[in-house]
Length: 171
Image 1 (cartoon, rainbow, N blue to C red):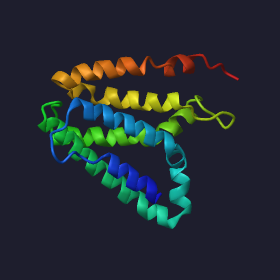
Image 2: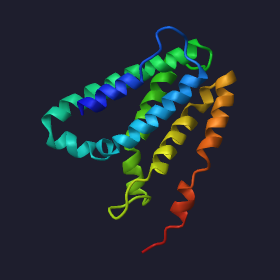
Image 3: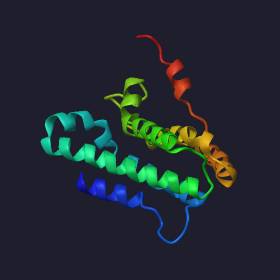
Image 4: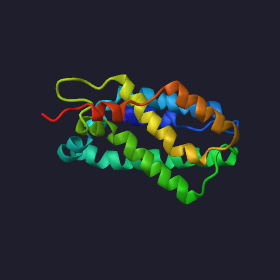
């Protein structure tokens, strides 16, 4: 857990010598995707870990708070750079929603039948989590970041979440 914490907080650091750019936004998406994939089992098992491990129960909420505070700094930096337009309350709400989506994504896939005990989480599903993240922040994007948003969505491709759900038959 300590390695995961350190890596996550490091990858969410802000550049000290310049304002954020749209390239930074893409970089955050790429490193976040890799991090979610590498540590997907922590988020899948987080409830069990909190219930069964006193140390984890103390560490995880503090870590979650640190990640969300760093997210707040990142989004404020995007606002300051003119890439996004949002209030402090909107930043807070966005961060909470992003945290919920990203940390519960594996559970969503399991509960919706996309993965089961008989198969495993494929990397394509991690990209779909990032796709949801992109959609959540889309309404706040401005200028160059809006164009980058469109390109990023195109590169992620279409989602087949609904199509695969509707193809599930009653058993």
